[in-house]
Amino acid sequence: MPTHVNGLHHVTSLASGAQANNAFFTRVLGLRRVKKTVNFDAPDVYHLYYGDAAGTPGTVMTYFPFPHARRGRAGTGEVATTAFAVPRGALPFWETRLAGFGVAGLERTTRLGEARLMFRGPDGDGFALVETEDTRAPWTGNGVDADVAIRGFHSADMRLSPRGAAASRELLQFMGYDRLDTEGNVTRFRVPGGNAADVIDVTETEAPGADQGAGSVHHIAFSVDDRAAQLDLRKALMDTGYQVTPVIDRDYFWAIYFRSPGGVLFEVATDEPGFDRDEDRAHLGAALKLPTQHEHLRAELERRLEPIED
Image (cartoon, rainbow, N blue to C red):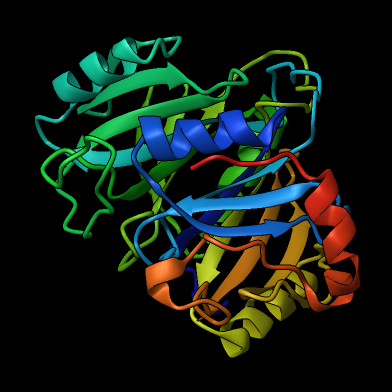
């Protein structure tokens, strides 16, 4: 099949409040808010995007903050941990910084020879910082210098049942990922020649299924260069029996969706046109941008949406 996948494009999760979510990713983690828009299907809910200076695919964490949403329950069939890449030697800085902000769940671990700092987001979200040799240029600010700043995603860790894990391992290889190594119940995959956000870990475990809520990953999106590559992959998936949505215009990329056999919702998103299609790069994420079909609701939405203080 065509192997057009570059790695991760973005990861989208659920939150219980916009202001707390924005403060965590910008003030604590030092990422840039690259877009402030709304959920296409629920325009009274923000869709917030955080990443590097341009919102480069492979760096962008996105959130739907549903006000006062109940917290999700961890389990199988979900992305359990979203990992960000940081330079070697950066973990002591981050351990001190996150502790100073009162961040929960701090724990130093290793996986497949890489040093990791585990931590929790405001809604119990599972995150890790992983020390790597990553040459991507970071966004800096809020007390985070370039020599320690987050480069983008390192990986996503899917927690799956034995049956779901077996089928998902096959799917990842079908999508162009190579099986790299296994440590305990974790199998690592990497797409060759990827975008540095090119690792997926599959953790196999016997546990009840997850119950999605605030702090849960809603879906993970894989990067392809353009619509032609996306259509090639869509056809290959459908020929294999996957039920894949038609192509959907998300303003900043085109998207298709399908449910992976382990239960995780997969998206395939194009790297085009990008987040600067309606804002210049110097002011990304500053103004509320609405999809065309919701522009007539602007006055009402600006009144109802939770204010975000930068």
